[in-house]
Length: 95
Image 1 (cartoon, one colour):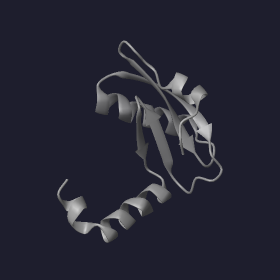
Image 2 (tube, helix red, strand yellow):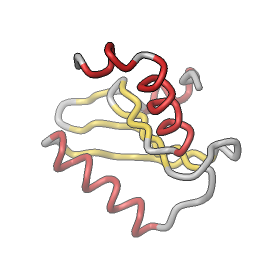
Image 3 (cartoon, helix red, strand yellow):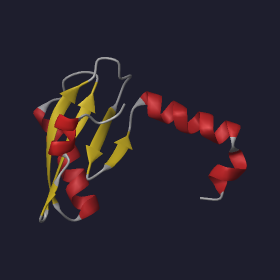
């Protein structure tokens, strides 16, 4: 799903704070929101501020749009990765 203009404004990088959004098919709890935020702060070594966005067409899991990248933990994303591996196995193994 392409990022619209409003979401692009959220994805801006200001100093040491990274802004992004969590995209989920269902509302997530405050605890889950904090866990995801903490994970990305530890991974990237910067403070992270994530808003939440609902996408009812998304199948299981969450996708995080952050700093110009999409971290896809959805079922659809995992199935796409599997499809790529099965249809282009030599290309995927070289990475």
